[in-house]
Length: 177
Image (cartoon, rainbow, N blue to C red; front, side, top):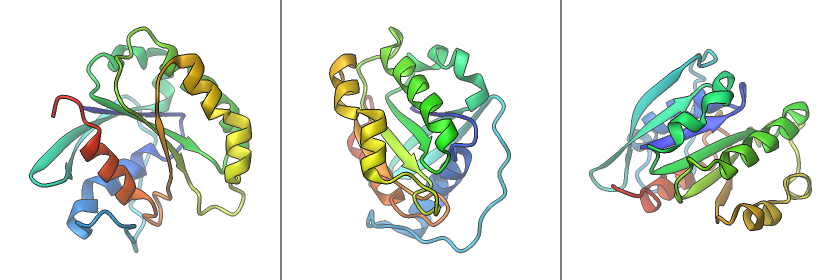
C-alpha cells in the first residue's frame, strides 16, 4: 500500500482522484492533461483508491487527512512507500508542512521505504520557485539527518503536469508488490 500524507489543503484528494483515472488517459508516463476539475472536500479520515501502474500492476493508495497529522504514525507501519504532498503556493503552510515532514521521516514506526516528496500546485502564480523550495526545505540536510534517501517531483494535480512521473515512481518503488 502507498501512503499519501500532507497538510490540509495541500491537494492530496485531487491528486488521488487524478492518479486513479490517469492510467485510463495515458499509458506512456508523460504529462497528463485534464479538462475538468472534479469537486473535492477535505478528507476527514482516510480514502482508499486503487491506482493502475505499469503492466497489470495495481497499487492501493491510502490518503490520510491532513487534520489527522497527530496520528499519521499509526498508518506508517503498513506502507510500502510514501507520497508526501506539499502545497508550494501556500507560503504560510510550507513551514508547517516541513515540520510535519520531518516528524514523519523521523518516526520510529516508519519502515525503511521509498519516499516521494510531491511539490504540488506549481501552476499557481504565487508558487515558490525551485530555489526557494531548496533553500527553505534544505532537502540534502533532511536526507542526511534522517538517514534516508527520498525523491522529489513538482506537479500540478489540477493540470496533470508531473503525474506521469508519480505513477512511474510508484511502479518502480513499491516494496512488496
